[in-house]
Every structure is written in C-alpha cells, then in structure tokens.
Image (cartoon, helix red, strand yellow):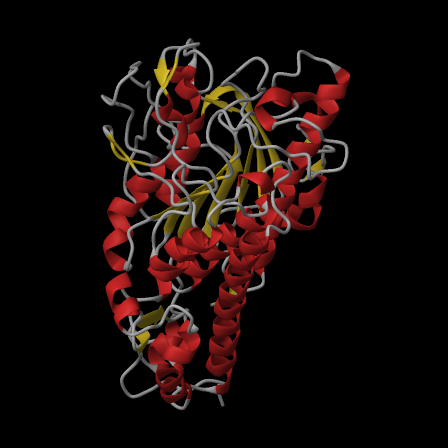
Length: 467
C-alpha cells in the first residue's frame, strides 16, 4: 500500500492555507498528483527554480580557483565552506562578459551581470541595460506562481552620481531587469518580504490587529482540515514546512527586538539608532526602517533570513525566480565582525597587492561562500519528489568582477548549484575555454528550464559540459 492518499479530487498546486489576513501557499505534496494511475506513470515532477546570489567587489583571485578539472578537483582555500556540497555544484572557470570591457569601475559590470549587454553610460535616470536571465525565466513561468519573481538584498538603493567614473549609482543597486529600461529594486526588509509571502495586505492586517499574531495561528483551522485529507507522508511534509515558516518568523521578530535594545549591531552603528519606538512602529506598519532605508541587523543573520525567505518562496511555489544581493556594487559594508578584519569590503577589495589587505579580503570572500553554503544546506534538507528542493533548482553564486583591485570582468568567480530537475550533472570543476561568454551559461539554464530559445545576450552556444 502507498504511504500517501490520493484524494478523489487532487489538490491544486495553487491551493493555499487561509486565515484572517494570512495566506500560506503549500509545498509540493503527493496529494497533488492527479490520480493513482498517473502517479505510477509520473512522479508529478516539481517545477524548476532559478536563484542568482550576487557577491560584490570580486575575490582574491589567487585563492579562488580549484586545482584540477572535472570530478577530480581540490577546493581552493576560499571555497572550503562549500566542501560538504561539492557533489551538488559545478565551479565554472573562464566565463565573463565581453560587453563589460572598457566600462569604468563597478557599475558597468554589476548592472549587466545577469544580462550580458552593454549599459548606457549616464549620470541621470535614463538607464538602459537589457533583460536579465531571471526575468527571461520569470516571463515564461511567472504566471504560474503568486509572484513572478522575488528580488532581495541587504543594502538600500544608492542614488546620485559617482563622479570618479561618471555613472549613476542606480546601476550599482540592481541586477534584475524586467526590460532594458526597467530595473527591479531589491527589498531589504525581511519583515516586508515575509508579510508579502504569507500575509494579506497591510490594510487588512491593521484592521484585524494582526501585527503581533503568528501567521500559523491564523491558518491553523485550515491546516487541520487539510491535514485530515492527506496521508502520513504528506502530513510530515506539511509539518516540516510550517515549522520552517515559524522559525523564520521568530527570527525576524528577534532581530527587530535586537534593534530595539541596541544589541548585536554592526560595529560603530549603535550610536546612530534614534527614535527606536517610532522606527520599529514603522517596520511593523510596513514602512521603511529609517530615512536612509538601512536596517540595523546583524549582517550574517540578515543575509541568512533573506536566503531562508527565498527557500520558503521556492518551497511553497510562491515564485520560481529570485535574486539576492549581499551588497550593492561598491559595498562598503564593515566586516570587522570577522576575526582579523578591520576595514570595509570595498576598501579591502582595492588591496594593491598588499598582504595585510589581501588576507582580510580573503576572509570576506570566505564568509560569502559560507553563507551560500548555508542556503544550500536549507535547500538540500527539503525533500521534494524523488530528490530535494536543491535538485529541482539552479542557484548561481558569484561576482561581477574577478578582482576588485583590477575591476576585471573576465574569468568571473562563479558556482552553479543544483541539478535543474535532474538535467544537470554536478560535482565538477568545469574549465571552459578562455573568454567563454557567461551568456552561454544563461542560455543553458533557460534551455534546462524548458524555454525554447537559441540565444541570450551575447551567447554563442549553450555552455558545454553541464548536462
């Protein structure tokens, strides 16, 4: 006998749990398979997802590239935190963007990281880039989910002009482009993202005085009803899913409390926190944290919350496309919370080959890889179909610069995780020919996801060796 029940009328993939002011989409369940006969013929394959995780300011290049090729490779020092996932990743070498060459500084390499196109040099708002790969994917499949895509970050959008290179700073705050002139700004407040995913609109929340009530309490009755209609395996999946939602919710509330007390904040920022009650009130009411849009959250926890939210959004099929920016293009995030680091990220990326700066730069790079590894932990822990959520995804991590000191847009540091629904081979270091277009990778990702296209950006052909 099967360990699950197929209802007479199968559950809709779009069915949600509802309560007063809350909506929670469901994870992929066995009960969503149309019939027992169909279940035998097909496992009811989960959808493919794409995520793009951006690390600013490049890497210490002499400590990044693995030794060896194919499955026989040795991880470099910076990549050590991802060792437990080496069977789930491909490390990609010699990919880059020809259209970034000649562009000054960071902006001409960050805005088009996911487009591969040349950006229009401007100091105003007349931006022009291209359609990013995440949005090409979202335009194909976004109508099947509640949200076509999800754009997240940790730093506010920067405006104004960088007169060192004569580019508007807006280019440095966006990697997702819906159209060549329409960038999609990242949301940096985890509370807003959580509410967007799991609560109804702010007016309903205020009217029902729901700000301090867990979303799980609100949908409890609906969850109990659903639980009685599905089998043991689905009940376990549902319990795990709801527990994960509650865990993220509790961590967000704890971070807001830390902001109020001034604990565990970035060094040097405690004295800047003023009018805490008003600010927290604005956060809970759906307004920005402060006039500058900055949150006073621990950077590690802030980043992990955002990656957990992407994981939950994928798990619930609320969206299948997401981007996350650890920081904007010229991020000056202070990393003195890491032992041995005393300066900001951007400052250390301009290392001038000085050993004391290179060593600190490497620690920051390793921290980013460690956070990415955390996200893969979460995605691998979620069983889905015959595999895991990670198996059914493609998650690209990397930077738009090879080295922050030289601003080199060639041979970018890139890691592709996940099997794309079982279509990609993993566990390898793929040494591509020099100057291979990164858009070859994007073309392969789109084709793996089922999109029929033979070009993306300046691609010449699908990237060889992925399948």
